[in-house]
Image (cartoon, rainbow, N blue to C red; front, side, top):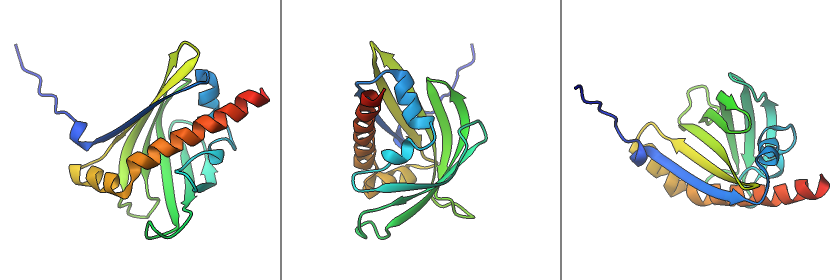
Length: 164
């Protein structure tokens, strides 16, 4: 019998999970409906400006994250997401880069939304091309930033629920 050599990607991944008190359909809306994601995307103190967004396979989301100060070395962070797979309301898969002509910061992301008795477990899985790229992103504060982003999303979901 032939052996299968499946290389682990764990050393190139960042995985962040959070279970939120909202149904999966509402969480999906917060991620995909126009005008929603700009209300919560990014770490504490950040705001997001969208220039283009088409949530479909092959569609692009171009946006800038505006930081609250210069402690990160810059206050504006251009981004581009290209959607590769969309399974409503279960999964978004996309490539993410810094929207440069020759992108220097690139990763592949898979976001899953699992029903948990009316709540939703969200898993953000980012896969980097190298261990060094992942480590640099962690050093930059991406793990804490991801946790803050999901906390901001959960607060936004509470507002969405109150308006429903």
